[in-house]
Length: 413
Image (cartoon, rainbow, N blue to C red; front, top):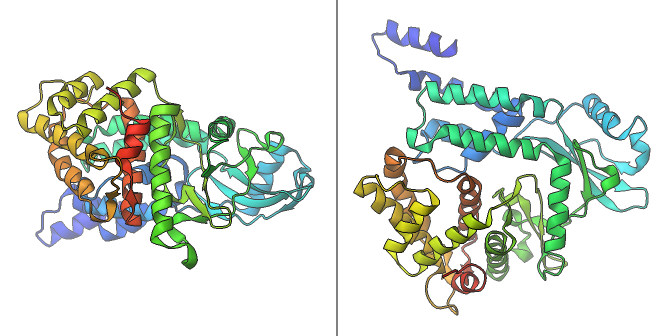
């Protein structure tokens, strides 16, 4: 209705407004941002997922909406919180805790997080899911897909239907806190002997499909390090280990926490450990896909364009029928992605001076317009995580021994 009123006003002045300009007027940007934040669930999640896209791909107005929406949600009223907790843990749920702070410390797309203590004084956090989120996923995503498709806001090469299908799957995973609890326990086992990483411990007796209770991590978000911790040495340490973990998750574990949100990484200055959060989007990857993907990046580190092209066809990135410009742009991007992992193993890659991200983004416009097939399903979450780690290292201005890490964990002939 706002777009229609704006359109009539412009027509009466002799102007010829476009549908896109009417939908993305200043007043509608504010309206959509506010509505996304109130809707939680699917609407907020798709905003968070797409906000990691580059503003060269998305219309700048839509990118602004999604960037403002990320990590922004309204928390539930106290009466509603009491009702959810009573349903999940029983009418006397408060007696199960020595302390439960009803004001959340964080509110996101699926639920909110509360500080609490067990009866023995153990410090914990309790994640509580918003009621109705599960039930709204399909309808919310269908409505968003309809809006974005009908308004032609996005280029067809993004294969928005595939992006939304991936979001649908991940959202349903994230709404199952029992699934997330198992993922936490799997990572706790995988990293039990790791010298750097720590994950929260799950308390099964206080966990349901809508409530997740786990030990409280005491570290600081890595983007908000305290002054004495904000040294380049510590930034290099954090970046190198997060890159190591990313490569291990793909090549060794074949199981990854795929959310690249930097708030999921905490640094504990007292212990010198990196604490990991939010395992709702964790997923396994098929061994066949991982083997081919490792070979693809290994070709890239050797500057083998023909090998990268053939492996891209085997993986399903290309059909072989693309224009030469599209083939070249894709292989160029693969070669560029391999650059940090190329070279001598005793030489660190300086992310503060890297142009990898810019050069990959430089090919995106052509690729989204000429791509003939959507990438493999596994790619959506894997590349979102990879992109997030690259951006993290760049933001940290870090020097990382990428070639050494790649040779040790990832390379495959």
